[in-house]
Length: 170
Image (cartoon, rainbow, N blue to C red):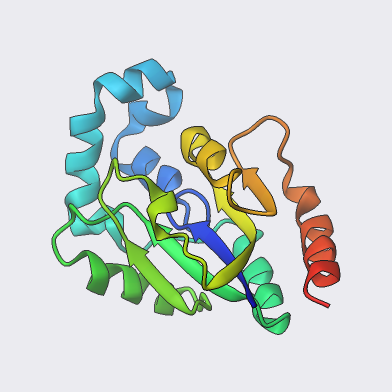
């Protein structure tokens, strides 16, 4: 059975928060409660194509993805962008612009359970997610699951993740 990694796009591979801080200056200084109560403002800002496009990558993401490809691990990128007009085209362009390797792109609804896209065709060896709830869901199905916004996660751990995966895929 082929190994697979399922990886969230926004704020995991691409740095959406940095772009939001540029367009909504108060975004970076506010609590999660403020962000939740202003979710519509944030979503409206993202839906303007200026924010959904031209995103930069997180420092670890592209090297990690290339390492996964070298290990012949199928890469599913998943994003909750279905509500953005032309989401697929915008997302594919961002992936191309940032030279992000992937095998499959899944665009789901904002509050959809992302584990709906896990199937028995693959052995899921890795998930990376910025949302703690989604991370907890993935933990039920994936060998190694990381929440990059967890205090326990450190970008310095990425080489260890890659090393563990190379052991799994051999």
